[in-house]
Image (tube, rainbow, N blue to C red; front, side, top):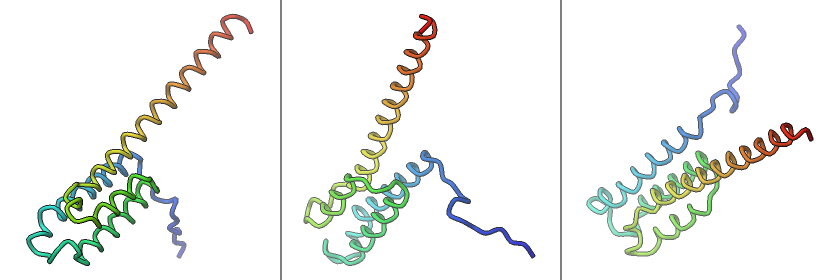
Length: 125
């Protein structure tokens, strides 16, 4: 029996889906750390909290690639009191904002190049 081999290229996720998944994960992780964990987990130095941060960081890097915005998220969780900031959500939002800015800049450059090429054709060059 001939079975199709499953390769990493078989399933692709669009960038929009990756960002939605990453944002949902970041929101859930921050909500757990801000709302749920303080009621059930002992102290800020909890191994459960650290494991969650490690897993969330790894999954976000897998979904979006490495971004420097993730580093303050990890380091901020180590400082008492600062861990009350929803760093994962802010990091993903900033990565999304930067990616949109890059996409718009790329489209604008492509439009400028197309307009310049069209103008050259119209001028007979």
